[in-house]
Amino acid sequence: MNETPFVPVAKTGEIPRGEGRTFEVAGRLVAVFFDGTGYSAIDDLCPHMGASLGSGPLCDGVVTCPWHAWRFRLSDGAWCDNPKLRVDVFQTRVVGDTIEVCVPPARAVELPSRHDD
Ligand code: FES
Image (cartoon, rainbow, N blue to C red; front, side, top):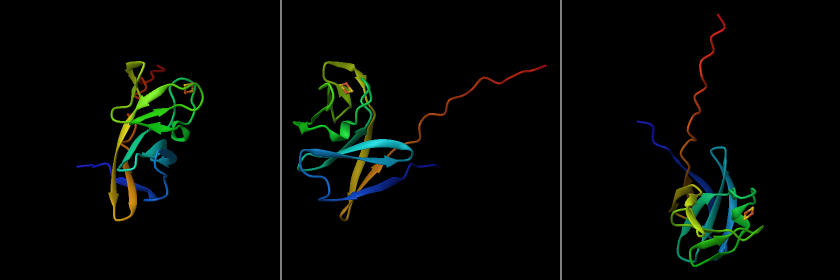
């Protein structure tokens, strides 16, 4: 069984309350936030024009994109204005004083086989 591992990204205390930080995990940029009680992780890339969500402010479980103020819920990644649009959400945990994130591998893209005969 291939279980996706949790990857250490930072020490507790390195992400201030109400803020996020961006880390590369398994080839993806992941935004990790601290709300004062726990850590949440979502895809760092804003689906609008690609700003880093990890640099946006966090309030009441919602991060606001620093470029054009789209807002995303950390609980499920939904865009507050249209919950059909979502960013990926990742599991987090704290082991000792280390924050860890679990980022499953991106789905492989199957290319059509090529026949040159
Ligand atoms: S890039 Fe995030 S709202 Fe525009």
